[in-house]
Image (tube, rainbow, N blue to C red; front, side, top):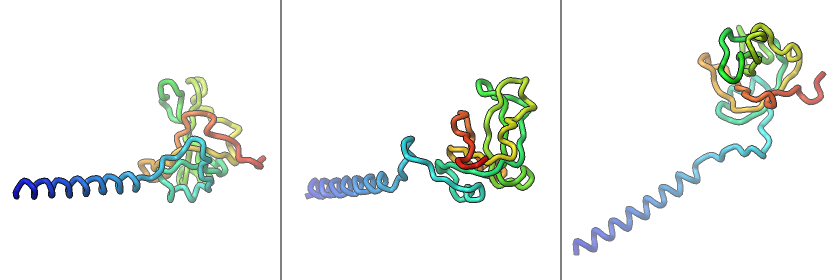
Length: 145
């Protein structure tokens, strides 16, 4: 009789485990597809979409270039959209190649509406940003001059 109880308990536990694993896999959010277009949003909305793949568009109002470069990428340059660094609401980081360019950001970005696509991440200060490791992630906003 004890063997039958043991078998019955094991079958119940296995059934519950299968049900739990099935629920866990169904609850996982879908990974963003490289083929699907990213959500498009304003810089102010980015804070509500941390961790999501998105396209954020806004006017570049200030830029800052780091003093130290990142091997294989160049010098990180931060571009603040719609608000200066002191009141930042969103920024993206692109890379300026070579030490001769350390004091130069991309002059064609200043004052222009730009869009950056990537995963929105919070900075240490809590300001959302996108790290653009490829120049193809940053483009002028369609229809802007």
